[in-house]
Image 1 (cartoon, rainbow, N blue to C red):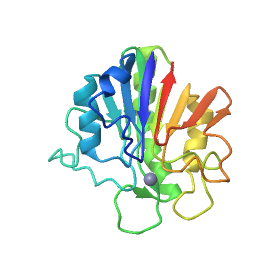
Image 2: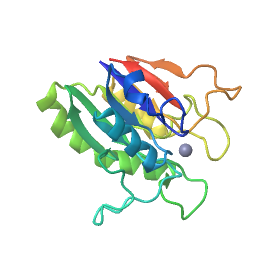
Image 3: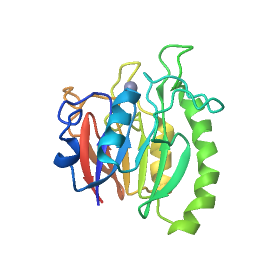
Amino acid sequence: MKILAVSDMVVDRLYSAQVAERFRDVEMILGCGDLSYEYLEFLVTSMNIPLLYVPGNHDPAYDEKKKAAHAEGCDYLDREVRSVKGLNIAGVGGSIRYRPGCPNQYTQSQMYSRMSSLIPKLLWYLPMHGNVLDIMIAHSPPRGIHDENDQAHVGFSAFKDFIKTFKPRFFLHGHTMVYKSNIVSPITKVGTTTVINVYPYRIIEI
Ligand SMILES: [Zn+2]
């Protein structure tokens, strides 16, 4: 199956009336954050396939009661798990906290506690759905993988521990720019997990 993963930057090639034709063999879209909800809504409407996404640090706070700050027609996957077209997919949004008071920014320990609220869901869900987590989507990279040393782009240690424990087949993220000199490759293998920086978009075959 081909999956279109997007993050951080609007791309003309996708924000185009030809997108459905260009990517006609793609069966799912995954959003890794920091994209306008109009863009996500355009993609899900034009391509008419499932779109699951997590928020980035530039996205608004999600209001669960009002369903506000939500991309219409898309599935908000922050700390949730779904089975879509035979694939188990989980997600967690946000970046490291670098400006207090902003939504979707967390300290290392806050991310550990956010992940600990996802883990019981996975332990309950995965045994009923083949026991394998196929894809984990996040906005931030794991610490030490595709991340940067500056305050806003350090990755999360909790994600590295998560990869070691749950061994997802793929871990997709955005947030850091692949053309920065200290980031050698957007694809890194960690054990059996393939970690991919999808910025600004990438086709994943699974
Ligand atoms: Zn970001």
